[in-house]
Amino acid sequence: MRMIELGLAAAITVSISGVSYAALNPQKLEADARAVANQATCRNVDSAIVAYVGVHGEAPRTVRELREYVKGDISRYRIVDGMAAGPGC
Image (cartoon, rainbow, N blue to C red; front, side):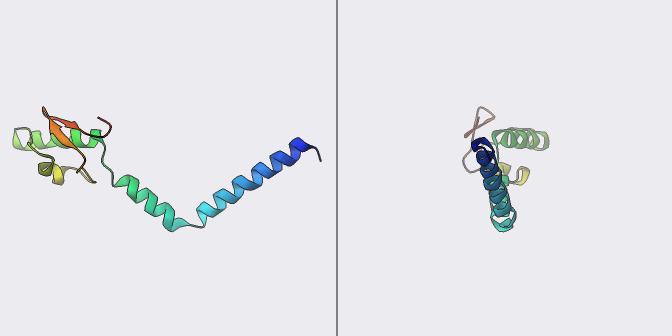
């Protein structure tokens, strides 16, 4: 067996082990997915602002008014000149 073949076999073995570990730990995968899904984005907050204006006819003053229009944590955002401001904006 040549050195390159040995290295390739080792790399494949390590990658299969990593995938197998991830497949055997579904609770961690689910927890990670939920944590990411619970984080709202700037686009989500902007969409919620548009929905709020459509219903109420005026822009919201605080993000607390947007709670029923967006899923996820929007506590890191604020409204500046009618647009979302915060992480990723």
